[in-house]
Length: 171
Image (cartoon, rainbow, N blue to C red; front, side, top):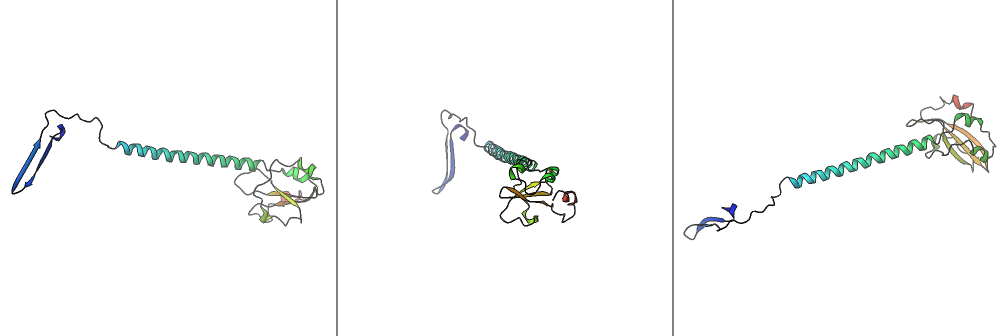
């Protein structure tokens, strides 16, 4: 009966029982809109999945960009051991600049380096282009426009050993 727009009621009334029914002459137009079912949840799940997918994609891109920048910065801060060997103390900084790589190390190993000369501006360069491993570094210190110190800073885990290959370059 309710399917065609009617009503039905029953229940106790005063000292008895009452039943009431109404059936319309013409059935009401049925609404074409369906009651909310699983579709809203399906769309919500899809939105959540797209949000997580987008966040994961952005994260992957950011990690890729960070790795690319790391690799670029590390590879472009390598001073070849042969070029380091040719440097002599007292050489003007302008002459030294011609053999230096375009970048110096952005996170120098200060904790493993000897004390710098008083008032000198020191720069660090990687001795090799290996990534994700500790490598030896070359430290060049300048004061008053001249090279005043050059040191080999050993990689982590090699306190004294493994430096033989650079000992000849330290002078």
